[in-house]
Image (cartoon, rainbow, N blue to C red):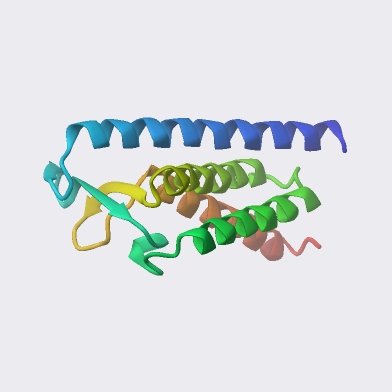
Length: 155
């Protein structure tokens, strides 16, 4: 492993750790301040609301329990494998850190309470949380890094 690869791994782990800490802190704050189902207007269509999701994103596969923990673990292994093949890919460390941190943040909820705490509501879109936003941003960044490579004609 080159020095650049080792640095990319350290940065990815740091981003993941930061996402987990921020995610869990915000969830604890929301849990302490809002009642289940309570809505608080923030700005325009954005509201804070407290809900518990036993499924995956947007409540799909509700009640998945141990299967969802296993799927999360497998997804993290795949992300780790993809990253290990080219950790020095530009932007990959932040994408992988966001994906991993978000997945771990939601996994902590699932292991602790068998449900994920969601609190951001935008219009009629299902409620989500910081971990979900980190995963989404990470997937987009990772996809863009591969699309950029393809557009540049690199192998």
